[in-house]
Length: 194
Image (tube, rainbow, N blue to C red; front, side, top):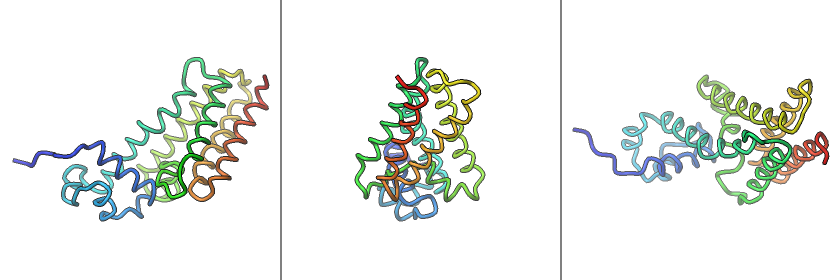
């Protein structure tokens, strides 16, 4: 008979998520994960199968608790200009509120794109899925704002690029990251003046 699990999986996954967010998949050692989660190696392997299994659980948690709530403002039935502005303002505020040494700087998925996803198909699919979800949410809000259909793809690419670039830069230059998000909001205001 196997041992009963005596820990809260959500707490463990979120603790590991912060390690992966801070150090990347390759940079996160099992010792780092043990320290952050309070579990020993055998418990981590028993619960998640491998370091990769724990990473996959952390990414799923990130999508559910960070990405989906952020995108929900853009996906609301009445999303439009105000939703776009709120999205970029909230991202900028989130970056500004984090201390420089926070492991939660930037975006776990964008950070993953520069490491693991360059040589790992499942990770690449997760990052591409995020980009696709972001583009769809932005497209929905742009349509709600009255964006002409013939400009939709260009505008989605512009805003998605600014957003993803800001999330990547947040790790090294929070000021420039915030400036990119302000530029995105300014672009929305230029496209849809009051």
